[in-house]
Structure formats: structure tokens, C-alpha cells
Image (tube, rainbow over all chains, first blue to last red; front, side, top):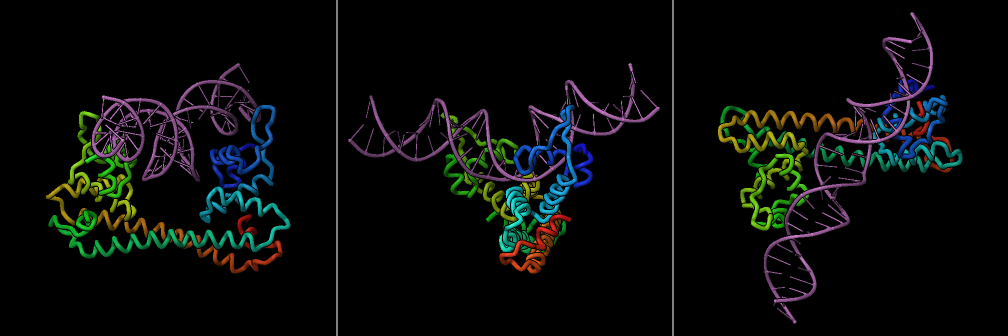
Length: 128
Length: 128
DNA sequence: CTTGACCCTGACATGATGTAAAGGTGCAGA
DNA sequence: TCTGCACCTTTACATCATGTCAGGGTCAAG
């Protein structure tokens, strides 16, 4: 399977497939005589795994760990679980930070009459 | 005032002060004979404004708009308000996306016994 | 054989920020 | 005055994940 087909089958862009190969996240695909990369179903399976992990917000480095755990038949499920929980906590931290910013903005916007007059508590707050 | 003092007074790193100058977010500081940049209190005030806006998650491009509104005595407060509300909405979208990922992970982790056995619903989910 | 779809590599861009190198400036103390 | 340290300058490279473009080779159908 050429890289285009692998990309369509996995949902990972050709650009990122080549990138993942370059940074060592995935092994280099075997090449045809033409130099074209050749992918198997297993390769596509792994790419889908990566795409799903990205969709859950895992960073590339974490995905490397997940891939290692995935291919390790003997690993304890607790390892995967604690990685997932740590990541969930990180996501929660980020979400709370964004939400706090949002609340601050909403509060300020509420105090701003939002008409043609120039005075504005939002800008005043940014000055302090 | 040298850039180091301006940095300490504003909370913006020297690196970023120079960067903001380079991309045109702030005007180039006047130079002494030595070539050193020279900052006024007003400059520090503007840098603090930028730092506060960054803390609220505004992107540099949005801050450019905010700075323009800030220095426009005649602008309507409604302009600032709608910019803030649009940004708050964007923050909300991002926060909800992170929270959704987090919930998915927590649900999966709950289904994972997390002991020494190798089977793990988290990895299974990533495969699909 | 031509054409169009596909593949290759390499490079540049994003956004915000850090860090490091290599060199000039300014000031205080010996 | 010399020395040393703290400060300043520019330039460049790194991060992270991704897009896009250019210049070139390959393949298959007509």
C-alpha cells in the first residue's frame, strides 16, 4: 500500500506519517524499487492508534510510551491506566485554566456597558 | 530605562520585548549612543497591558487590536466588549474540548482494572 | 508516448518562547 | 587606569505538530 492509501485508511496525513517515521515514533516503512514507501495493514493499524491517541490529546512523546505498552504483551494494565489518569489530570488543569480566563472575561464584559461610550472596564483591567 | 529594568517592571521577558518590537506589536524603542534600547514608564505600562492580555489567553494578533482600541480615545466600549466575548467563546470551546477528552479518559480508566493483568480497555479503544 | 495522479526529498512557515554564542558597554572597586 | 562583572546587542537554533510548496521521479491508463 502506498502512503496515500495508508493515509486515507488511517486518517493520518502523509506529512505526519513521514514525520512520525523521521522522529522514530514508527519504524521506517520498507521501500519499493521506486523508493515508494510500502505499508501493511498492521502499519495502518498502528497509525490509527496514533490518530486516536492524538484525538485524546496525548502528546507525541506520550504516544511513544503508549505504543510501547501496546506492543508489550506482558505489561500490566495499571501502567496504561496511570498514564491515562495522569494525562486526564493534565487535561483538567488546562481546561480549568481556560475556564478561569473565560470567567474573568465574562465578568469584565458584564461590567462593560458595551455602547458608544469610550470607557471600558475591560481595558482598565488590562492596564493594572 | 534599560531593557532589563523594563522587563522586571513589566513582567515581560527581554526576549519577548525584542520580539514584540520585531513583529511590530510595539514601536521600536529609542536607542542610546551605545545602541541600548531606552524605555519610558509609558512603554512599561504598555508592556504590562500586553502581559495581562496574554494571561487572559489573548493571541498576539488580538492583542494588537486591543492595543489599538486602548490608545483610541474615541472607540466605543462595545468594540472591546465584543472582542472579549468572542475570545471568551473561543476559550469555552477549547475548555469543553479538553474536558470531553478528559471524560473519555476517565471513563476508560474506570473500566480498566489497573492491576497486573495485561488486558486493558484503554488500549483497546485506541485501536479502533 | 503522453497525461495525470501519485510519490520522493528538502525547505520554509506557523506561534510564543527559551537558550546560547559572540561581541560591545557601563560602572564600581582596586 | 585597569579589571571584572553585569548588562546590552544581534543572530541563530530549538521547541511541537502541522501545512504547503517546489523541483523532480514513477506509474498506469489511454
